[in-house]
Image 1 (cartoon, rainbow, N blue to C red):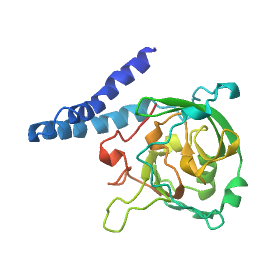
Image 2 (tube, one colour):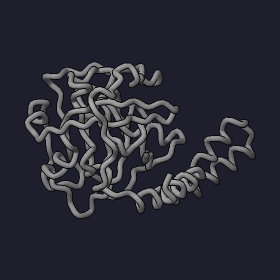
Image 3 (cartoon, helix red, strand yellow):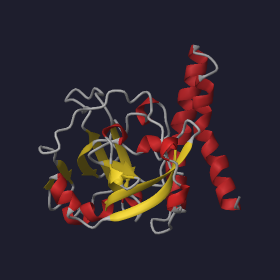
Length: 247
């Protein structure tokens, strides 16, 4: 392990202290300590991880014969698989852009295609080498023409939205712009050379080797470019997971 990777892992361990404490008890003192640790460590983690991240450095890719189709598990918490009408499906891109988009599946498939066979890593401790095919997210963002103020990208899922009162309903996620334009970050519609199954996020999901699995939101319907991280930054993030979620 390189000195940089070892330093990164030791640093990010701070962000996990609150999660570990959460499993030790639910007293008021413990809760205060947990909240204090998270408040202190999460902004540091974000800054450190973004500082060492290279948007051009490629993650390891694998051969086709290294794919194990059964190793990509379905998170049991995601049993609310939505029903998506493929003919009516639209991916909207808006916010801090000069050219808002409303794309059908045909429009998306007409964009440049990329295939990548990478390791999907879940925070629960398992991983899976999987082939993903789709359009690089950077191609969609270039088409939308982000403004100079756009620094983050917020995603909404077909299984629910955040309502006007700010209540969580379904999955949503926020990424930093550098991770979004990474060449291996895809809006995937293909898994292991076959159409993406609905349980894996069809018709469109995020797939990338540079983020943990909980950051790779499924059933993407809306992309909003923003200047700052929203108060509701991500479904799992708002439940205590680290925001950056880098691998």
